[in-house]
Length: 328
Image (cartoon, rainbow, N blue to C red; front, side):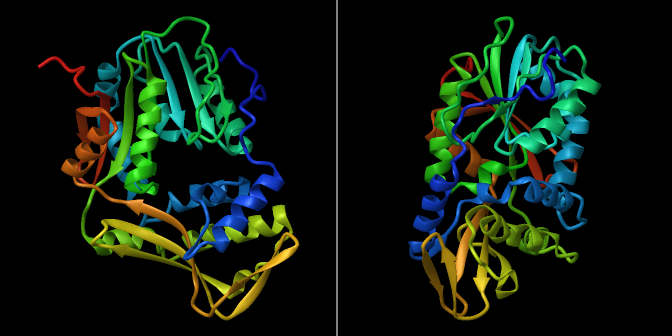
């Protein structure tokens, strides 16, 4: 790996404390109250998410890993040679390693992660496993326009890798906007390799977000702990509970933090009032049919070139290209 582990590119767009305060104030003044899901991923939150992925109820990681183990070689063949691989929300890059094993002469790998600690750890591990790989880590919010590091040689194409069905955390309007942004960043000859969780038995879906060990609840509540640490709030974590429910009509999990009593919480120089049972929406997780996802891609000017499914047909990885670029 021809980059120092601590040499992280930073686009400067992670909000400072004053910006974070305004984001939180605006969200908690809204009706209904809401907070952005990227607040989950400070260092403790990222570690908790890795534990979530190990829970028996959380089928997503198990199914996507099985898919990559079965199809990584075919996926790499589809991507082709001399690819610059840019991964949104890279985390520990465990699934990415399965793909890199099969890629032919990749130009570079650009992991994009908002939390610097997991990014540094991932870069170190990748350096040990792929010593010849050019890694250009970017500490940034992938939902904003990215200034990608310049690779040492020109790639044949740029492929944006977005695993884990994170696209499901965006409502339709925002998902389309993000896919359009990705279409711009991948260039005319590029592609998007993206994970999409599929619709299935609602009981299986709900269990994945309400594990028996309570790790997901701890992960959700860590958002409030983060606001206490970084903004000096005084959220009583025992005064809120995790709630995740599958809305079958909308085809999505809706995750909230629910106030257990009427209470006030310090926020900056003011306070926020919560009623008994009042909820803060913190995340959605959309589930798709293959037709749903093809329609979503189409709204962003993209089309599905290939689809790979895990052996249980619970999860998909799809390769998107610009609409009209596929020879008929």
